[in-house]
Image 1 (cartoon, rainbow, N blue to C red):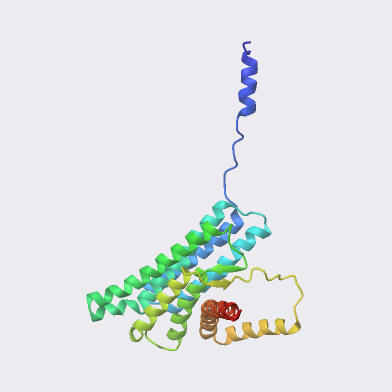
Image 2: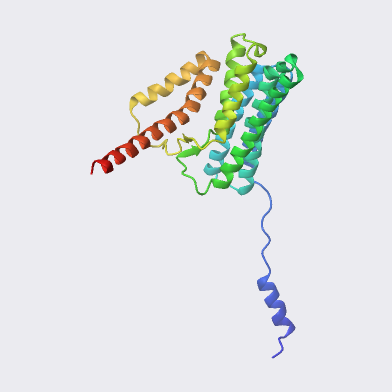
Length: 272
């Protein structure tokens, strides 16, 4: 039986896909753009020898990076575009910016001792950037299957805080990066390798801001803010340094417990 032209036309109309809406959400992506600008400004400041401004810009990018996701959730404007844009912004602010600032502050002077020695400096900076990119790619690919309570590897903002905090603290103490090239290189390599490691770090995402806490907790928060105001470079570096060490500390602690349980099981089986 032949179909009429009207039936064919109605069938085509009913199966025609509804065009998707184009555009991006302004609020969260505006915050992400501000974080990207802070990272870009840090690079420019580092190239001009303004290391204090560069480090402050990295910490500002860190604050903005923590806000864009919350703004997206609060306004119900989460999107795949926003997630990818945030990752690219993180690569600039927490990958390229700390590496280039550290290179300009300390590692660039390694070339004064020879061309081969100088290559170690820029290679260390490149390894940090590559580890940051790998860390972000792994996070994006495993976000649906990982435990949200923990990060696998040191988060890139924390690695950037460790590097920028070291530069800011020593620069504030009038320590020239030219005099500590090797410690600076080791710090950068350590931060980069921790990013791509399998060491677990607490994400603090299970902390509920709406839950009740003891009065001493509020007092502790007030004290932290007061300490940051008194001496921001030293306090911020100390916070990120302790957090960076917390992952390996708990890793060794868990390994020791596992070894103890294995030894106890072997002794129990041999005694039977």
